[in-house]
Structures are given as structure tokens and as C-alpha cells.
Length: 108
Image (cartoon, rainbow, N blue to C red; front, top):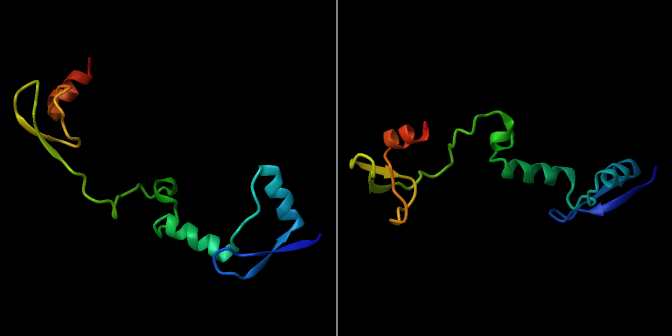
């Protein structure tokens, strides 16, 4: 089994790409890797927010620790007239309901 050396696009070091790896990549329809394993692992760690679980995919529950606070907008409920806040900017084209009125309408 011959290995081909690939130059990492991130750090510039050469890493082996074995015949076995090549066959696996081809069977899955993947392109050969452009980064060495340490650089791929580092990129995955950064992409996953450092939790190692892939965000919500890893079973950590997606606590939203780094998530910015959602903007809320003032509105008047079309059902009961109470002042409420909603997570979107009402534009007047559709009625806006408070939580209670919205839930009671959804139970129909």
C-alpha cells in the first residue's frame, strides 16, 4: 500500500494519505483531505465551540452559553389587548398575540 504525501493547506506540513484512506474517501464520494489530522481536529474544535460535542448534536443540550440575548419587541396582543413582547418586529400585516392567547389559539 503506497501512501501519497499531501501538503496541509493550514500549516504547510506534509502528511501521508494511504491507499486505504484513498479507497475509503472514494467509496464515500469525498475529496482527499486538504488539512492534516491535527489541523482538521483544531478546526472541528473551533467549529464546535470547544465543547467537543458538535454543538447541540453532542448531547450537551445546547445551553446557549455563547448565544447573544434575543432581541424582543413591544406589541399589543390582538386577542386581549395586553402589552407583550415578541421575538420579531411586528409590521402590522398580521395579528400579534401574547403567550396565553397564542397558546389558546393553537389548541384548536
